[in-house]
Image 1 (tube, one colour):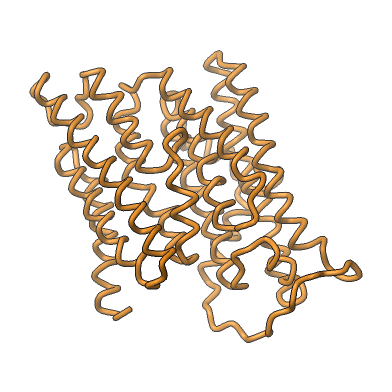
Image 2: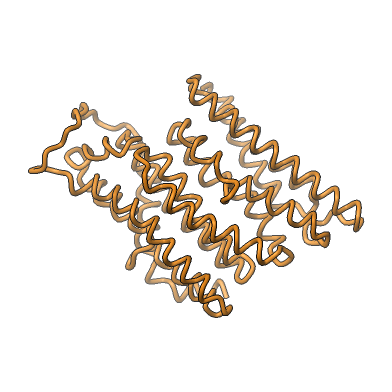
Length: 348
């Protein structure tokens, strides 16, 4: 892609998200969401492959539907109350509509069906943008309306996402689909605690972005998109493979890695709010996700010699990709657990 065009698209992505962050009026927030959606579409379709075009079309249709629902709900609220302010949503019908629209935007269950299919059709770089940056603007809106949202609806969305995100990834062999289901499960954890401790949900989002960035960049560096090709990475890059294994375990939420922190704090918060059953279901659902992370770890690090590998080995070409971002993201994904007390002081 032409570097000037790429610069315009990336700056539009940034401007769209920033516009939504800064807005307190529904029309301005909607405009920011639309700008970021329109900016990522050429990035998704740049491969000119039928699968990429199909993924782009699916993404456009779902995002357009969600944007129309947001516009309709905010107009309904303005019609009945005379308020366009984001934090003045008092119409219950408009609130439910807007919650479902934002759930569709980010891919929460049960409106998650587009996410694995779309992510599968993209390259790893665009997939990374879709899994991280594109979640920020809708989350800013969810954060603002969280005190007024229907608690039953929020808990249902959170539980459904965690369970479906874990269940859906069990039988997958494509890494991008596994990461899509991982994304759905993590979004469920963020959603369930949003009403009780919004700062904790934002902390979870930041840590999820760090861990997902590390995972995507590792797969990009070893040019791997299938579980079977992961088995060849150990002999080429043993150190990176070890770090990737630990990052995956961090995504699964195992101590003493960073990923354990948000799960621990969220379960603690749910218990404080007298929701022990919800906390128990969430903890059990996390085991489903942990299974497919362990499966990926097994493929990467336990299928080496003297075991027989049935995959054709690829050429060992020297990688020309920069690893600075990957190093920073991996460090964040592995080493932040000891500073939990400081983070708790900031989020409470």
